[in-house]
Image (cartoon, rainbow over all chains, first blue to last red; front, side):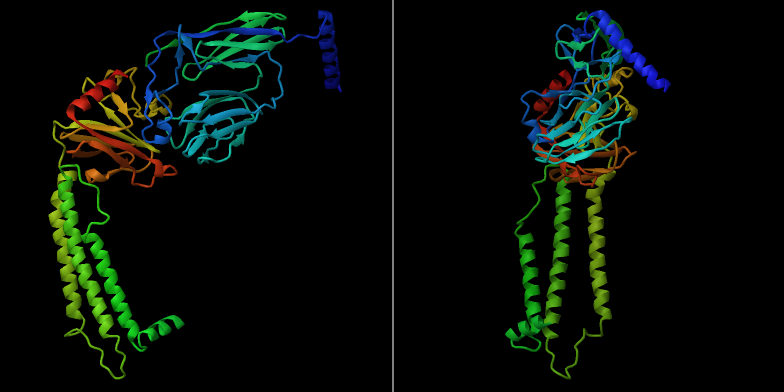
Length: 238
Length: 282
């Protein structure tokens, strides 16, 4: 009874404040910025796929390891930037997340998705793969996917950073980043990101890099405001 | 049961099946030996110094066992032929003095053959497995894992960095578990997915396994050696022919075993140095 009452009161309060602001809270605020590094990042190493000729011949230049991928002007690539606190829970979108095994590489290297979202895994190669996401919080599994087989439909129920490896090709490596928020982005070669569609409010923004871990910053976004936030990770050569 | 009787009837009935058996047996024996004699499905040419002795040993073994095989099968054919006469009251012939001398003779012949082959072959075996590598041999570390081989060269400093299994991370291509942050010798170590070696120089491999049992086998080198988890196993060879050869895992190691392979590339001394330099620059 008291819970119901509290809910009712909260509802009235929310509606009241919205009315007080003159309109329903517009989700037009955004947070954008750039992720960079200081110091010397490790040299990425070429991956020799000689043992899998069907994959090797798909690459004219050697594929490099991607654990610390960098771009011009100290940009850091494959960093997932997301709202870790202050966001209202959003239902999983019906949009399917696609993950490819192509040329004995995981594409994209880092794949963010929402809790409950459908994840579809394709094998585009002429060889078998055995995808093995090393989940700890979510159930762990590994599945063989011979060339030409149907995509695997799956998904995760809990937020987690999940390393992904292939049990057949040891160099294949990537990440599933399962998030409870619908506001996330992965930095490109320029290190840039943008989280759009935010209602006014106070947020905690987290940047996650597979080797350097997480950094957080608190940001207050006004209605329709674009806030700039930058992250700087310290890189070591080894 | 109609088959042997009616088939035998084609050859004139009673006892003729024994003769048919003798003929078929002799034909199979002669044809299969002919394939060996003509080397129809033979080994790829040997490319290592120690392989010559292995090939000679194999040849001696095949000749020895081949002669015994031929003799044994022909004798069986003769017995089948002569015993096929089922005339009533016919005495079954036996070897003079019964079976004992024949069995004794067979044991002696086979025993001497096995002993001789082992004795002669121990020299070839010893040259590969019981003789340590030369001090001047090129040392290469081999890591086998499900389902690939990786090869490590000491780099310009000539020293291997230490290995730390807890540091193994395939995602950053640290297949050996090197610790370049704290170990200077590890920083210039060269790791490749192909075994590239210079011609006419002894190569001393040290085999490690990251996970389960694997095997290093190059047909052309006539060398095969298992990886045993927890052991550092030495293996050496000298290649005398440039080219690209397949290294396969010959120990069932799991799901991707069929796909576990790498390549041995034997290069001239100059080409090898050039390759090494290019690798060091990466």
